[in-house]
Length: 208
Length: 208
DNA sequence: AATAATACCAAACAATCGTTTAGTATCAAG
DNA sequence: CTTGATACTAAACGATTGTTTGGTATTATT
Image 1 (cartoon, rainbow over the protein chains, first blue to last red):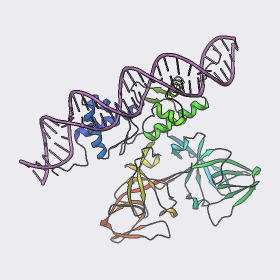
Image 2 (cartoon, each protein chain N blue to C red):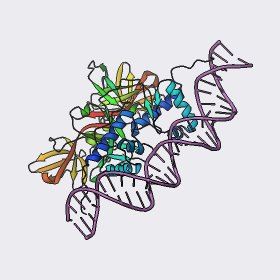
Image 3 (cartoon, rainbow over the protein chains, first blue to last red):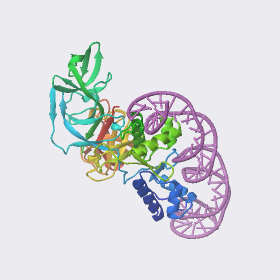
Image 4 (cartoon, rainbow over the protein chains, first blue to last red):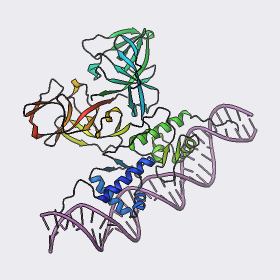
């Protein structure tokens, strides 16, 4: 090997990559091979070579979806217009009422969680009644508002003005609210005494 | 005019629009007419009609750039301009090399995690070596690139081309990589044998 | 001198693209 | 009963797509 290829880019490659990313940012989609070509006055073939080099160097990925299937790996990242900021509206713990948080600064971001429709709100979890489900004290749960849920779902349930976070299991006419903590016992209630507020669709934790 | 067209969407139109937006979010580019069609099992022509309706109703714009030239206009919720879509670049497990994911559709959203600066990437966790830290199999960890970390941080560490996710503890000249699973044992290595790739700043889990 | 990465070209390939033409069926309001 | 919006289909159009074949020239290292 005469000259081993470097992992960093030549000036030309850099300029092309920058242009491609700027295009994707402006237009919401990556350019075609020929769009890049006409911007730099080079042929599709040359662009094709550049894309392969840039892919080898880890700057982007060429997809198999056909037209415009470029995705970028390293920063700067693409902002996502569909992401929303979900306010953390309260805290929730076993056996304790929902406690409102006025702190407007508390908010998390959600993406895919919203794709299935339905309003989503966020709660901060206190206590360790769900530790064995990987939900720790201080975690944020994203909850989709719904009045029904399937067996095994983690739900926010209202029991005489007390909100709890538990696994839901139907057992005949009764409902079992199962904590994920072997030191705690399940709660059994009549189905009509219980109001399901929503289902946990995501768990988020900040460690920093 | 018998029935004046409403500015709001039918259930079908809503579902299609949601899917299209979710696709654009996941893949970094809008879908083609036929991709939408095969997702809903309808012909390109029908999709074409839907797109024209959705454009008329102001939900998106069809561009003149040819393939995939859809841009979206209105957002129902509070969008957060600081949020970015972080691609999931690989999987990580104890004792296994980083494995690249070609699935460009995988991406999570990040907000506050980015506030402290530094590039952030996402990994999907396999295995249960960190269960007692509330990190389960399949969870996504957001990792900030950095070469140093504090005692007790959860880090992505590279050990002779093997990447692992562990607690980091310095013990003299050695480093202890501590799993959060009482069935697993810590790994001791010389500080110069270890390369820290980054620190886990957030854990995300999708339950839906 | 040999090697290999860079930086381009013309011409063409099959596949896919958005779109058009020409229809059918349902449903609700005037 | 008509009108117009919705919700679709089959078949095809020309344009554009990523990619391939098969090159030339330059530059920098071994």
